[in-house]
Amino acid sequence: MQAFDVAIAGGGIIGSALAWELQRAERNVVLLDRQQPGQEASWAAAGILSPSFEVPDSVPLVPLARASLQLYPEFVAAVEHATGRATGFRQAASLQIFFGEGAQRECGALITAHRGAGLPTRAISADEVRGMEPALNPDVRAAALLPDEARIDPRLLSAAVLEAARNAGAEVRAGVEVTDLMIEGGRCVGVLAGSERIPAAHVVIAAGCFCGQMQAVARYAPTRPVRGQMMAFRSPGVNLSHIVNSDRGYLVPREDGRLLAGSTLEDAGFEKAVTPAGLQKILAAALEIAPGLATAPIIESWSGLRPDTPDHLPIIGPTDVEGLWISTGHFRNGILLAPISARVIRDWMDGNALPVSMTEFSPMRFSENTIKQPR
Image (tube, rainbow, N blue to C red; front, side):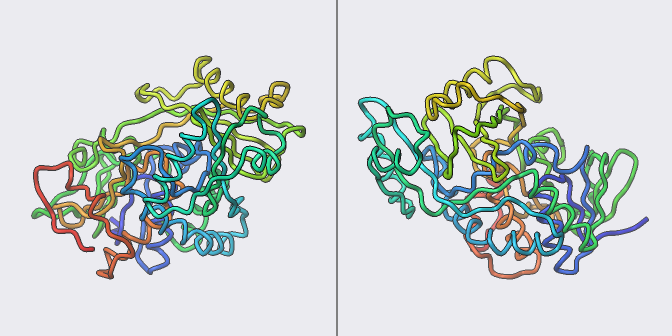
């Protein structure tokens, strides 16, 4: 029976990035996924790399998000060098546009909130934003520029990171569902996959929205699925160079000419489906942003299950069971937070100082027990 330094349950972008990070640090890693790795939330994501926030509850995430975005150029360069694969990474500002009589007030409130969190968002005039993006609705009344942002193709990235992990020596097993933990003397010493025992000195649970279904880890990772639907257009007549957000949806340009539109936030359990109501909502938002899409062909639609948590913040770090770690619950920010999530777990395991405070994201915040967190 082969023993590993680290067993990772979950082969999405979080688990794959961690497998690559740890394998490069000369730890012997096995990555286990209940289906084909990279085919759940990571595959369905839009690839918006933004440290900004939509609701006040997400403000604690800003330092972690900014730290991860700062890692991205190095992260992508290393992945692309290791695999020869492109990831569609591009550093480019995003736009937030506003409609209606309250547009100026809403824009001002957004800028005030962002600057209070240290983000350099600034107002631009409606004429300026339409000059930057002529395809936008002429009814735009106000706009904000979010300069420190980027975008990436999550499907390309997920495939590249998974290949990089394999090339570094990590063992990747598809169709292997972790069903329980191996606990001996109060320490986690591996995982069970049905009747198979997989020994490991450290176990990291990174199974996204499925973590909440694992009885042994549910008290640390009470995740639930939140469905998101999306669609893609191909429209030579509507060319965008920026991600464009409104209060109803967003449009994301891809390097291959596609234009992605999203998304929904639905409490639909584990039903991963595309619905007429969901697509109607996305389409209405997309047409409000760029009316020229009315005649564009829809070339694809899909849905994914985001891993949400009770406070909508990720769960990253050690538990009160020695050898058991959690990295999940990244909700709408899994692609963005992959580099920092991997770096933090590696540094924690190695006993190094962490690059950012992780107190807000402790797995122990959902438990009656407490754990002393390093800063």
